[in-house]
Image (tube, rainbow, N blue to C red; front, side, top):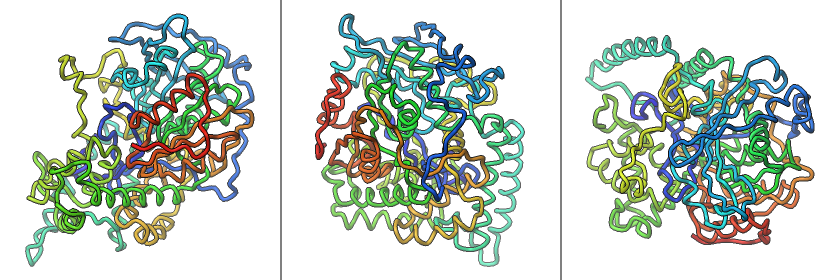
Length: 578
């Protein structure tokens, strides 16, 4: 992963890892530069209708050309304390007999008690780009209530193109790496020449809001370079990594697990995967929890603006309530002092990057925005670290904020530290884990780009993005403008047929949607909307800051788990507190 304090500033994503010992953050989104990514969105169509696909029959399991996939048996083998297997799915569901497949790693924590077992509980941790196998190996089963563990084996998988999937997505080729190194050398020389101006001033840093023709040309060129890298390295995969196809894989997994109906929990992007499954296979759902909802009726601009506004509000909430969470670590004794410090740092990094250990570039303003935004996911785990990093930055050292922007300062698993267990990846996860076949060890960055751009039709004309900048700045300040520019990469990547639409899932049983009032990445209004789109949909609210609720609130945990075990309904208006 390219570090965010290089010349590629970063933004936020909606990825979450749902354990109580969850990482402080999982991935940052690029804003400008050659690694720009797109925030999770759901399309730009004008008609609001969901297109019909001849490639998705009512019961694909009955198709002779899909029988070998639906009738496969998982060969479970030990992998540490868990069981691992591989699931084979067609690369193209419209041509399943062409010999092209994805092989997806699957992991299971065997927790069900003999005589009490209901079945398998399948989890998706979000992203797109988060790895389900890693979620299991990180001990998610230990953080799920005993009642659920006794009745379900806990299962997850790496979706098509993600993690140790074979093949896996990447946006970097050996040739492009060499080319980038050459270009970086050339750009460094040009930057050095431009820095030697008559008045001795250094070259300007990348702006949060590209206003001039030159700044916008640079932003667009960087996004196009990223898209070109994805096409060169993963071109044949790009048409086949959309969420609707991943949902079809989920149904093949259901069948391979021997389950007649699916019991599922999805966080953040995992709600998009769950929604797609419910729309395609409504009568194969037993129970479904969608936590941190993505509303499929919103277009790219609405979704981006809602998220940007959510992060702006969350940072404001941090300034107001820091003392309640971080205590003496807060970077000021009053909200006014904290706001002033953040404003001071934004102005300072907008002029010149802060020094960062082992970095020639430093921490610029977009990277500061990224560090602030990413620290809003789990206040209880992150705000103290953020506070300490802000204090250090105010003293002139951007190293800790740069680490936050990169996702390197994480909440550690005390059990793993105490046991002395190694933290490196298990080799059983496959060759992609070790970086062979040209795929980096962690390809979440490429997956985030490819899947979002496939799911979401974006404008091809750059002017649409420039037109969005001023309204975004008015609504969400720097969080809005960086949100807009993060979408640019999708202008040059293939999109699927998906359009903004309201859920159509006739026959699905009551789905439980969890919404957190202060969720910055998937705003609460989207959970309200999604719950109303499902027939019989239920909304469970958490009155707290942070992203998602299940795994962060004992009250939410109890109600979610009663639903998973006994299908106990959640009454309208039910609200939990942190």
